[in-house]
Figure 1 (cartoon, rainbow, N blue to C red):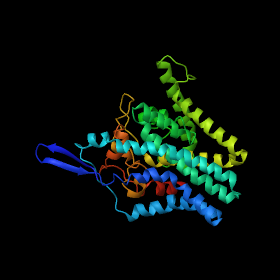
Figure 2: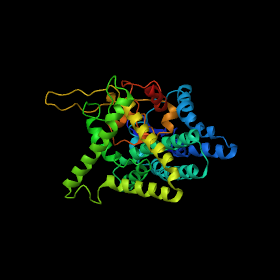
Figure 3: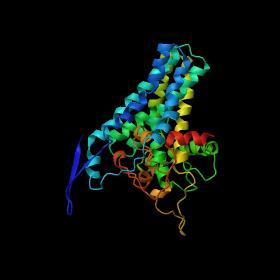
Figure 4: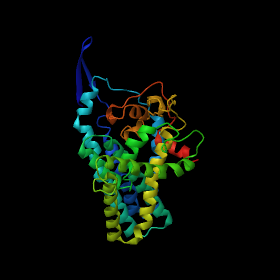
Length: 350
């Protein structure tokens, strides 16, 4: 286990070890969970086994969140520069990118080669779609970085759920307008997730495209330029989905539609619970106060955070967007979710 040290003027040499260092590998392995369902069906012949990974994600992980003690630990601030400079954590996020492609391709192959009924096809599509949706979380972490390699990896992984507009919409749109009535990705008090989705999904697409167009215009380029990062990701999606349809035939189209819908729905679900009912104060000049940790819901549930690259430390993320996942902090005086994200998703659906 790697140990970080710093010289404190009062305490002398202080050491810190990240107890979750190797547990973050769970976030890398998480995209492979659909292979369990596919393997079990190949072994047993029963379509219901395709639903086992879904039960694990939406039932077992929330149960583990409540069985394990919450993790409110924070790294010492003096250590954070060393922690964020450690390439190990960055490599983990990059490792997940090809796994998302592999899961989608294998899911398409499975849909094409197995004689699935409606129940089995639905289970397969939802299972792979849940993981494609998790790919947006990887894209979220990488898309916040300044490195060209990180941002390219973000565009690649966002091509899997066909959501190439996410980085621009999220970074320049959602982060700027979060917890305000103007933000299509912040849910309002008393608003159901279904009503929220009707403005969040189209609103995000429109805002992302507008912001990317404005960025290109400032650089002297048009919206339909090859420099358009949204179009770059969408082009990869077209090649990916077109290649799958060409290789396996139109028989996989229902699978692709189900998994894409469920992937998008996972992001909508996350956006819904992350800022539900929270508002920033509006100043007399019409501007809003700076986003603070209490403008996002936080969660310290261990199991779900370990498979989501600390996404649930969302309060720190929105207040300090440049911080890397391994150094995100818990705050005592912020709204706390009663369950991890997967448990909260189910609560939002009913």
